[in-house]
Length: 97
Image 1 (cartoon, rainbow, N blue to C red):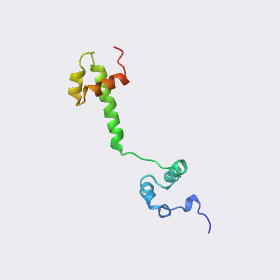
Image 2 (tube, helix red, strand yellow):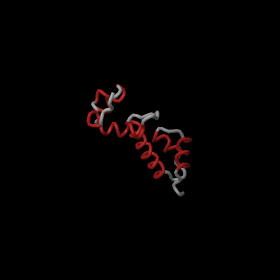
Image 3 (cartoon, rainbow, N blue to C red):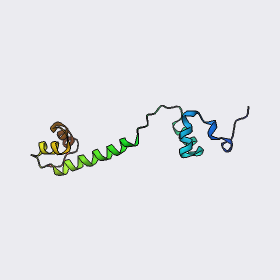
Image 4 (cartoon, rainbow, N blue to C red):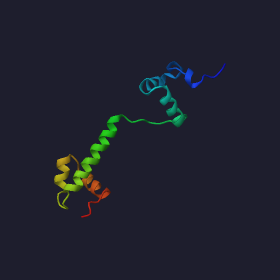
């Protein structure tokens, strides 16, 4: 049996688990991903996790900007966090105060 060239590869040649990817990004891009990641196991997070990460980063920046040294409790209440969570946010990224 002769190996197919790239030009002869069709979507049906891919395993069922990759056909959705082929339909979304095409055969060439799927082959590129396979070449880069083939043989490895990887968890791919949902897009919402990226949005949540951005929201968290913005919230933390707002907390740092609003912190005056005495308003940890108020910031916790405003952002639906515990005082300990606010303390950790401030400790991770000091405001310089």
